[in-house]
Image 1 (cartoon, helix red, strand yellow):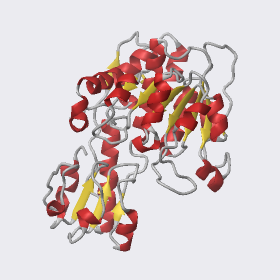
Image 2: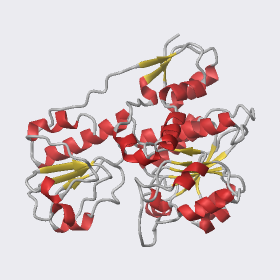
Image 3: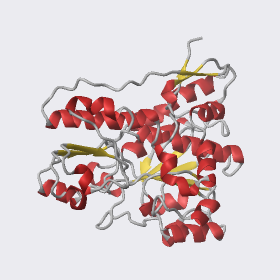
Length: 382
């Protein structure tokens, strides 16, 4: 949680603890507890403590016992959307890397996005910016808000660029479809769903053997949501049977002890860092700081320092620009070399800046400039 000490210093003394090993004794006399997804926020940790506010700088809350906190009337907050853009940029980096390797085609592809929340909608925008067709599946959202009303369809279509492999092709507005249709038609399936253990919208091991059986032959599979939404044995079996296209995994069941064999067979494997841009993590810190200010009735006086700008070489093209901002190959190599250091890789993660912090100095290709802008890059004035 970058700048967390600066943010919360005005509230009192700030103590930093390891997220996985934090114990009841560590929080017994604390007034505020802010953490990330490695800490289970429940009665076992908090019972008998003096904690008056709990925050998790994450977009997922499967590690939070919400019922316990609410029964205790203990104010708590999380940071929905804080790292959504970071995850969407990760997906861009993964797809462009798979293209560069020849693992997916260069023609017109269809991306199926399962889960259309803060992350999924940004992924849809960036896929449209790449000129890819988009299918959406999100039954809870579809039930709540109907098909097009709550999503920026016009902006998605406006963000689309011509498919250079198929001149004259227009990008249609993304549409909600059933999971069966999405799996049957998508060339790339990417998951952006919370981990829900049970109920009508349960997602625990949603991606099981039947799921992979229904996928289009040779389709790519990407998971950046939670490890528990995938049945790792089923995924591994389908990879070994050569029944899937390229596989990209960022989140794993059983973290930090992950399946080494599955990692070895994945085309790109990273240590749960898709949302780990410096900018996204800072937004998480800021969200919890402002929530704490609200709970303790004090005006916000701190704001994060997000300075920093980078420039690409004059002759940079799209893949080069994305690799300069975020080169997924580095994280893939680090995990393969240090699988036993999963938590350490996350704890010591480098300062990765989002596309908005990068300026394309010059390009003779107006299509590239337009595409770069829609992905989030800045383009210097001519």
